[in-house]
Image 1 (tube, rainbow, N blue to C red):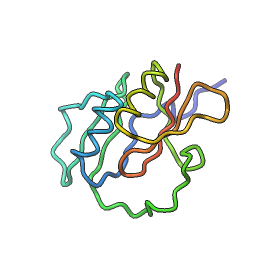
Image 2 (image 1 turned 120 degrees about the horizontal axis):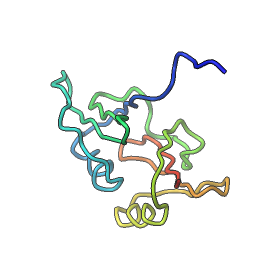
Image 3 (image 1 turned 90 degrees about the horizontal axis):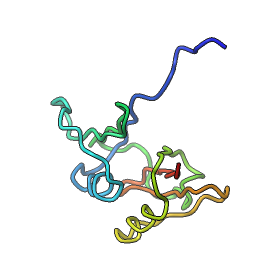
Length: 126
């Protein structure tokens, strides 16, 4: 089997209304490290490390998408899936931060939640 031209994801960018508030979710709840090597750009934001050089880029720019009317279950909306070490620990962190989540209906050890800006995430144990 030959290799394709695309062999992985480098980073995912998400729009946020307030970088500092967004960091309360990404850094404080999800436990991501902030990359202090983000270059000076024309807009606020942050780079968050996922491991193996992959990142999530927070971009503080106006969001053209509606926030109202999104499905309650993030699995029925566009979402980014992230691997986590412990579903139970993540549930405890989300509950402590009063962040709503729904468990995966597939039976996998996974849940869906949203950040403060409505971006959906699937958090998969494994």
